[in-house]
Image (cartoon, rainbow, N blue to C red; front, side, top):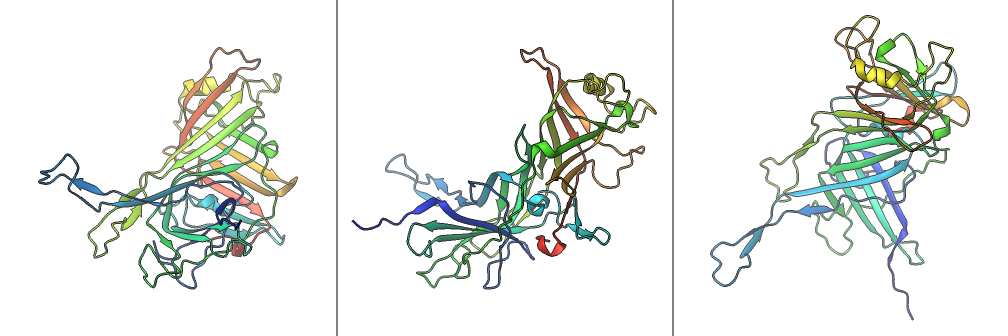
Length: 381
């Protein structure tokens, strides 16, 4: 009995690269070598075609007479990416990363501050079959003109820091067609297999995280909350695809523009007093009191909100971490500037032995600082 060659779910490659021009077609020199991180599955941006049926002068039955091509769209997602470095973190929030060496040490800081425009990217995906040639005849697809519509950074109790690209929008795909000389946006001779560079570092563990906060009820005090059970930081770019008059017949978006950005932070907090004798330690009533203050600083009655930092250290190394700062760069708390605002913080009656509150916030800006031994040359941009 001969072999039935099939695509194996365990054998695949997925990588991304930064585009110089939005939606540029693959060429012989095009690369996509960056790894998103560790994950097991993804929904790729295979196209959806909106064929429009018409029942025009149908005299025979109730079926439509003709269907014409409508708009095409391509979207995909990658859930629960275990972050091994700071490479893909910028995709939903910025088009640049600032790289700087720290003094004369071997460590570098990579700072991501949210920008108006996002950096477009391409994705290369290859299925490998079960042949002895290790999938040489694999199915390779490219997706170009990519931008992240929605993403979530999160960490569950006892788990790992992960990132979910919940919705990625692309302009169009390309497919490696070895049997035809035709070259169109859907079939391209240069859509070749890519070899992603895999990271070999440790992930960022929940047990190595630190959560510090300046509550509006007393912004002079930085409190470290030790009873955070989980958190999720969501960003939505509200992307707006535009279909303009063009001479092409692919009917794909001409450009995908960024809409208004929304940030949300949610976390579950056990309500525990850490040190009842200290005035600058977290108190179990703090979030309820801050909810009632509605972002107003008790000391000076300024409507300024909350600032906070979430830091994930790695390998017991003070010079190896990812730090989320809310709000982002240049926040001073002065009049006219705002931090995070608490939308809700319910304090229910529960059967649990420890009462928790689910705190949900909105905030205007975000900054992410990654400190590690990788120079800027190793980062996508």
